[in-house]
Image (cartoon, rainbow, N blue to C red; front, top):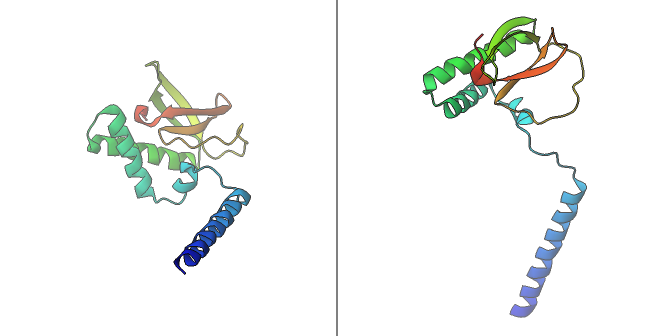
Length: 139
């Protein structure tokens, strides 16, 4: 009696497992991307996430990192509505003055994963997409 019950339990588990594998194969799952989850996050969550990232990469305290993250967030909100002039330090150490916006109907080259360590914008003068590290914003 025990052997028969064990056989049915194992065969049921195999059927459930096979069904699960078939369902996983037919479902088209997109890779998990921070961009899809960030649209659901609150502004406060994004602010603290970026502040923590700035504090970790630049070794500054959280107070300074929060100020920098808040400046990046305000800049991004301004760029959604208008062309904004700002400046940031480039990777090579030089300072770049830029005019950028996020209010553009131009298609990008493809679907890249969202990087929270940089702020992407459309450069009006260069007529193309550019980005800068969020900890390098001078404003």
